[in-house]
Length: 187
Image 1: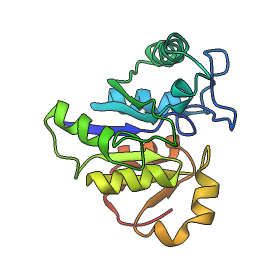
Image 2: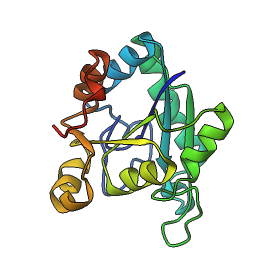
Image 3: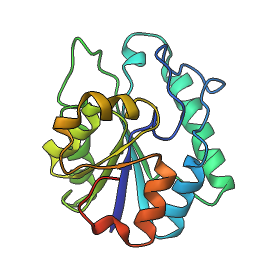
Image 4: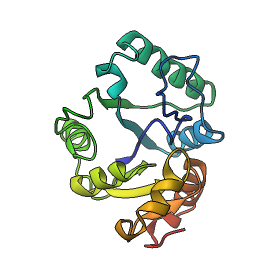
């Protein structure tokens, strides 16, 4: 089974320091939905693993969160794609559980539910917590420069050794689907 796991805010959709709180605020990053559709059409199962502390902080409720995800799925369906599963941690940053990234809980839960090992699973994120979570779970981290990615790359270069870096999810998917994901390098 070919699997790619994506962070949501900053990788699939535009992020905001004020949180994305509604379907109206949820806007895809140019090319991200097309990239997910290409993955799906190439036989990949695509999952999301996302911290969503705005739920615990009551910045938005589960209905609003569901509406954002419904918007994502609807727009993907129009392009011939889909998200196969959504994993999220509503934990407040001051009261994290093992499910909240940088801990590996979400990824380990996904692996357990699917009955797969994570050593050949790529986790695409825009923050250091995504990279740390992927590493702790035994997955292959990839950093994109969208969202917080450019800042993450600049401020944490010493911790990113061996992590492949791409300008966007679309750029990563283009390399992956042309067989270029096996080379150990950073872009």
